[in-house]
Every structure is written in C-alpha cells, then in structure tokens.
Length: 82
Image 1 (cartoon, rainbow, N blue to C red):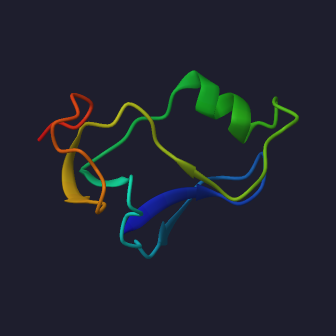
Image 2 (tube, helix red, strand yellow; image 1 turned 180 degrees about the vertical axis):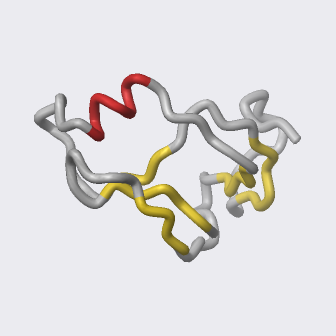
C-alpha cells in the first residue's frame, strides 16, 4: 500500500510503500482510493503543535469501504459501511 509520510517537520511528504498487517480482533481494515489534507494536517506538517512525533501518516476525509474485519468486529456496527 502507498502512504503519504511526514518524516520530519517542515519537510515535504514522501510517498512510501508500507506493509499492511491483519486487523486486530476489534479493528477493521479499510480500503481508500484517495485522501485529502486539511488545515490541521498542515499545522502538524509545519510543526505548530508541540506534541507531534514523526513519522506521521497523512490523509483525512477519506471515503472508504471495509476490506477485512477482525475476529470480534461487529458487521452490524453503523460505523462500518460498505
């Protein structure tokens, strides 16, 4: 999977290949096609927040579909949509 990663503040995002692990028992693995960067993300990128730790993986406001459920995930949960 590809991810936009910030390795240090005030540096450009780098597109990296990252491995994807199986979800833990109460997790859901989602597939996204694209993601947006919001103003809060930019504040992190420019080191305006003192509690930030790199590397950070970026992208918010992403439409997604679930790909795999953990063993104890509830498929009836209204937060999980296909």
